[in-house]
Amino acid sequence: MGGEEVLRTPRTPHDSGALDGQSAGPMVPRLALGARLRRLREERGISREAAGEFIRASRSKISRLEAGRHAFKLRDVADLLTLYGVTDEAERATLLALAEQANAPAWWQHFNDVVPVWMQPFLGAEQAASVIRCFEVQRVPALLQTPDYARAAVRLTHSGASVAETERRVLLRMTRQRILHRHPAAQLWAVIDEAALRRPVGGRATMRAQLRHLVEMCRLPQVTLQIMPFAAGGHAAESGPVTILRLPGGQLPDVVCLERLGTALYPDRPADVECYWDVMNRLVVEAESPDETPTILHRVLQET
Image 1 (cartoon, rainbow, N blue to C red):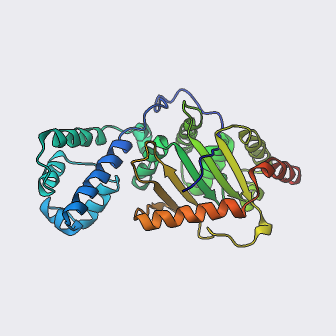
Image 2 (image 1 turned 90 degrees about the horizontal axis):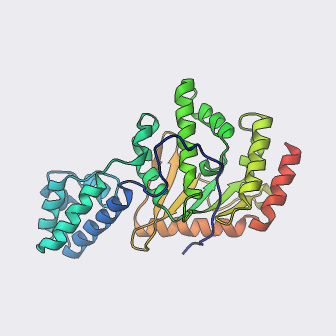
Image 3 (image 1 turned 135 degrees about the horizontal axis):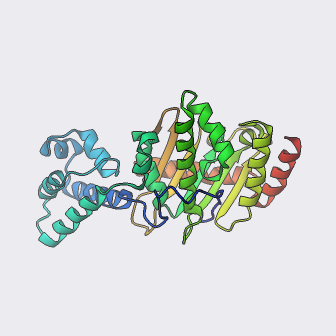
């Protein structure tokens, strides 16, 4: 389900001290523990409501824990393991150790002043991902933006931000791009609507530099870039941008992120995840071939 090709990103600053390219912080243990707790609960036939009541919490908290979008209290994990009948001391110790790892500081805490709560799960999963699939309508994907383009995009969405805050947001975006240059690099497969290429974010000079950067990125083996042309008409993802993150190891669930103005949705039911994979796979069929991307970019560049 889904391909294994990928896309590149621009140069990033190396002096933030926030990310070493090897660790995604607590996200992987958080997702692993959440998935394990979900399986244990389902095997016992216990509802989320009942599990929540047992630890003096709500159904929604159990849902967030199982989806890896909430920090774990060791007491809650221990109580849930008791509820689920986990009596083996070695297994309990392993899962409680995983809970401690899941509460470790995240790399993005260096940028805590500009990272909203809704974005935290995404950043952790993005940095851990082995494959990233995305579709963008209005903007060039963040992982492929130049600093000047990113700066212009940040100013559009955070018009009241100070110069210092804007630069912090740009640095965060550039730091995220390191995943395309680590070893092994994350594989990025992006589909960009032609509208994002035609919209001169930051002005003509900034947009031309961004287009040239995309041409360079197309040459990287870890990056696959396709363009959805206007001529294609309607397509499978007209409701907005979609990102799917595949985590390494084959045991953790894929993470779907639907970014909206000022927030994001993370559908995590298996049927929903399958639906978005279907959408993504239809998009790559409907878009122009990756081999045509450099030609399209050069044509848009000449017309910009």
